[in-house]
Image (cartoon, rainbow, N blue to C red; front, side, top):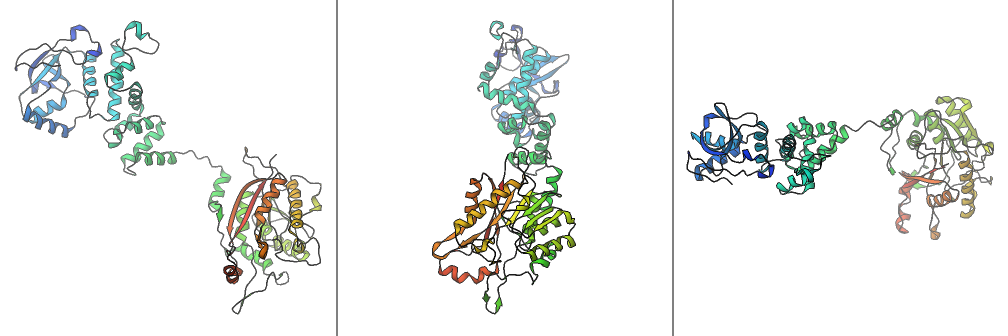
Length: 525
């Protein structure tokens, strides 16, 4: 405590920071009135706050100075140790002298006094406080008063971090947090030191643990006002500086396809691929009427696959030069899209006319070579042409026939449309899965190698027998033959026939089928 005496007097001064263990010779100092003009303010660790100066001036004017400043005698003048705001307030009030504690001039002790006084201030932000904590420790180590790593502080009676923390009225853990903030990059300290963000200690601790690049990026974002939230600035900085981990292949893919979502919506593009596919899908010699329906005076057209649907799966799950197979290719949309995108193709369809038309279209309108276009008018379940082959297909992409949906070849027992019993139908699909599993190349999750079997499947309504959901049935079969269900992707189904069936849907209280399920199956080693 300081015991004030009348001005010009002299008192015995009991040092308020006796925990520092300064030498006994420094524990008694004079309190005198010193001319304000004789006190020099050198480089200060803490910047002056003009608002605080004004507040102090008002207080001093009302109740006078409660605590003297501290100075050190040097030659013919005094050097300010602590109390710059009080000194500035006296200058503002134009008072000629100020009560001062005069200390012997010792550079380390002078700095220690300034640091210690500021640490007792409640106006320090986290960055300022960390600077003073680190500076104080450095001085105490130089004075031989603080324990360091490797020393025996108990036998040497040196002060520890726990004791320093207790002197500030905080736990050792909080003390370490406050000290950690000093690890902020110097430029970051300068950029944020006088902002509101420096008041949040834990934000500054979090930032101090980041590398230099993140620290500087966060400080830049906050100082420029790009965001007013530290957490948002932290996230943005991380994203801005995130290493580009994309492979060139995936960068290209990211630019070419839509966001891969679990529910996809494909639109028909009026482009060259669409025109090529239409030469087959709208070939009157190949068309088969699935259902006859009139809506008013208009004939409801059959549903046809969207080329963009096929192209998306081809590009997402295969690369140029890969082999794509379709065991039930019909009008060949999957295979034409594959050939158009530079893939080799293998396909099966029971109609020779379909096979010839799709082959001619691929050869005439895509870059595929004739030897890479292998199409067969045989059974796509048995795939006899490859009965001894293994691991030759990169992507199996097929639009499997619905149960009892249509009959293309009424006299051909191989046509799935002729099967009337669901159990027998599923036996055929199981046989298909066994064979296509043998032909598909293995995938490897660790190496990010994916060679999928993708099956587009829908549902069939059977009146009072309910519905057959082929997606569900195929999931069960896939597990049975030890294929892994990698993903399920739904796509919006746009069918003119849906509007025609609206009345029937409402009468029977079920929904209009507006989606199809695409199962993505993998064979792991």
